[in-house]
Amino acid sequence: MKEYFKELVIAGKIHAAGTDEPVINIEIAKEFINAGTDILLIPAPYTIPHFNEEDFKKISYYV
Image 1 (spheres, one colour):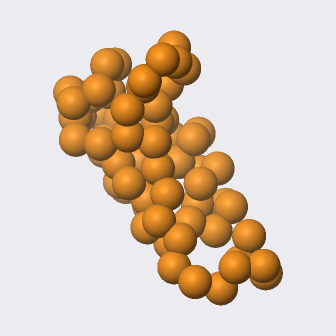
Image 2 (cartoon, rainbow, N blue to C red; image 1 turned 45 degrees about the horizontal axis):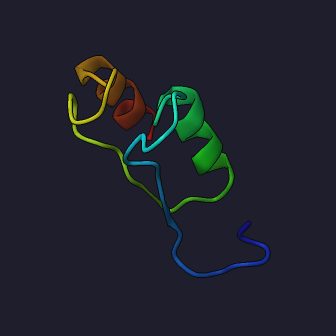
């Protein structure tokens, strides 16, 4: 993405509106980062279904 778009990229999935897939997990976070995300939006634990402190820790430590 950075070869085509040089500006700041802020990305993330914050709510699960109408979907049954995970909003974010470590694999999804890695995909965003590998695609060139500069700032990754991570929801606070327990603010979306099935997302807890451990999920938050895994993602934030990786980032």
